[in-house]
Image 1 (cartoon, rainbow, N blue to C red):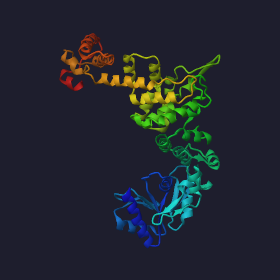
Image 2 (image 1 turned 90 degrees about the vertical axis):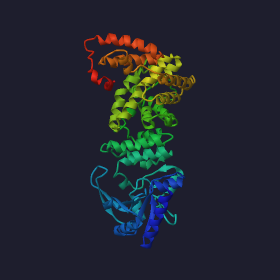
Image 3 (image 1 turned 180 degrees about the vertical axis):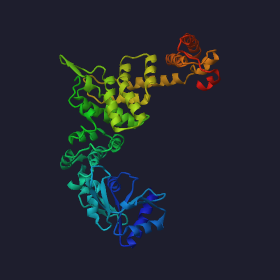
Image 4 (image 1 turned 60 degrees about the vertical axis):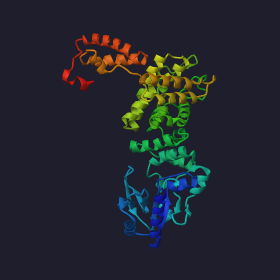
Length: 465
């Protein structure tokens, strides 16, 4: 990063010699004033022609044209993004439906006017350090406010609705009432799911309180298009004795924030945070109230359909989808196992069913902490961690493999899959390999007698196992 700063200063000095000025812009200036590190350095060049800028860059290194017609450049081996001021004219509904005109002499105010929020519209002279702030961004930064720059230009990109929520979540800022009102009037239907996911992902992974992202969208009345499953949780009751915090929406927001504090323990923090979002989707389907008693029996399985629908809407990552559905289905079982002092065999099976056992414990912990109960929640984590150690020790012991069955005189066939699944169950139950092999061979011989247990060619036996 230090080298990038030196290159930015070198560019700025050359630009100054040609009568221009170079400014740091956007998130880099915002984070600098917040005392946060930002490795994404954006420099905007004013007062020189594109040809002059290209000559300057060519004299410093190998110029990269990342959007020459848009006035965007880079240098090989340097992560600084170099751009020229530009005007944009919306001609459609998509985020690429803009006519762009490079205008190096537009001036700092008009250049900053096209940015989304005042805290992102500040500029800093690369050489002097002077802050140029035409729209009160520094004051909004101090007050912790997300405020749009310009009513007319703000509405040209609907993603800014999500960005407002994302920034509010990451920095724990509030969104100005006029910006909330402007966002209510915008439609998100034409946005690509990749752009929606990118903003949500930042909120889930970079915020201490990701719930703010969804709370802000709720305030803007912008949940319906992309997050209807979350919207459905509002007003769904829960038993006051166990959920004094209120409805399922409130509980889910609390779980999200608890999950954020332990997400790094998991194998896939992003997928884990999504599981915190989806874990109680089923309560919107199966919550019942009879004679004042509220129940949501089977909500963990009922929630798989809406969770799958939600995930397919926002992501194409198969591993993420599988992870989230796995944790959603299993999320109730760890705390139930702890409360019932379940057998080692039972907890071994539970952890074996989990794609990420650490993630399963984490969602159980977040689920327990994310509520207000009359009776203090039991400390289940210690029990679960002890049992996870036992599971890992069990899985590290020798187990029956396909080669062992061949060595015992069995011919490979379609029945091997079922026989090895049986052996795995014995392994989870703590049966040592010698005993498990005897039982598995006996079971496999019974399976081999079935008509559909087709033997495989002997020449390929070792490869198939």
